[in-house]
Amino acid sequence: EPQTTLIDGNEVSGRIRDTLREAVVRLRTDGVTPRLATVRMGDDGTSKTYVSMKQRACSDLGIQSEHHEVDTDEPSATLLDRIEELNADPDVDGIVVQRPLPVHINERDAFRRIDPEKDVDGFHPENVGRLVTGDPRFKPCTPHGIQRLLSAYDIETDGRDAVVVGRSNVVGRPTANLLLQRAPGSNATVTVCHSRTTDLAQKTRGADIVVAATGVPELIDAEMLSAGAVVVDVGINRVDTAARDEPQFVGDVDFESASQKARAITPVPGGVGPMTIAMLLYNTVKAAGLRADVSVDL
Ligand code: NDP
Image 1 (cartoon, rainbow, N blue to C red):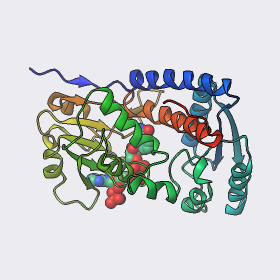
Image 2: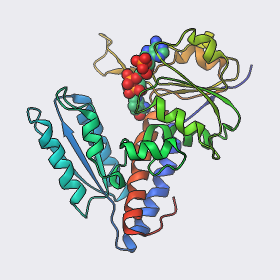
Image 3: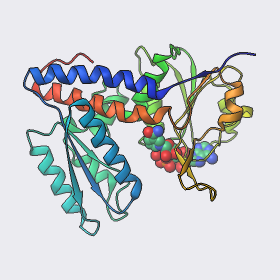
Image 4: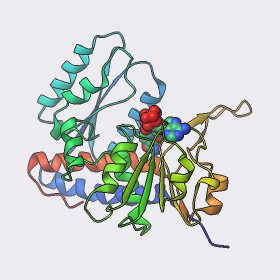
């Protein structure tokens, strides 16, 4: 019976944070203290949770942070003005506009307004374009985290068939673009699937690496995998169980069956999730170094 490797995102992200902590110390010696600004708007509870996680992660590394709340009822101009202020603030290195935004706000307009040199999420079209054309500045956090997880476990991507299930601008598409780069840790042959894909199982069965980013709980099961596949589960889906007070989360992969067939698999929680924040910190430190023209060895 072959052993399945459990890909431990807590462990890998912890090591990345240790490296970043040292880089922050060096930057501060050079008189540069990285600073992240978060902006939040709306009543969504998850965006509050994510913002406070990011703030805490910053202070743990010696990165300064500040938070801006924009009132839910404000017009889009208020949010865009706030972004402009942060663009102009010489002390701010990175800006995160936390999703989801209220329905009356056009997300694209908000992301486009962020100074591309402070766009640590990598959502600005300039940074998206740089990634697509093979010259990334800020790699988007979740895809970059996935790439780091694979390399931490010596999982070869070069020449392998990767199937990314999901084509969102936040996860699926940039993950596909990253795996497609002509670069070490990439060089995969990439297929991108989505809700209109016919015979998804046939596509995933042909893959050496499957990345599931659909938001559909336990969509990918063992039947859809080839033996020995590497499975990366990006999904964070809340399941309400009457019996428990604490919310439970499941991924986009049926872990129980898939882990019987996979060579390596990420759990939910404790897989991709912790990597996303680590890579946001990475981009913030990188942004501070770039802006101050101080080289940071990350
Ligand atoms: P979106 O809803 O924006 O995108 C989902 C994608 O999955 C779409 O492209 C959609 O296709 C596709 N899809 C939906 N159903 C199916 C199906 N049955 N078969 C094939 N494809 C399907 O979600 P996100 O990309 O933002 O997030 C995906 C998941 O990852 C969520 O569970 C989210 O919570 C989680 N997430 C986790 C993060 C982390 O840090 N771990 C970070 C961000 C997200 P179509 O385009 O045709 O609609």
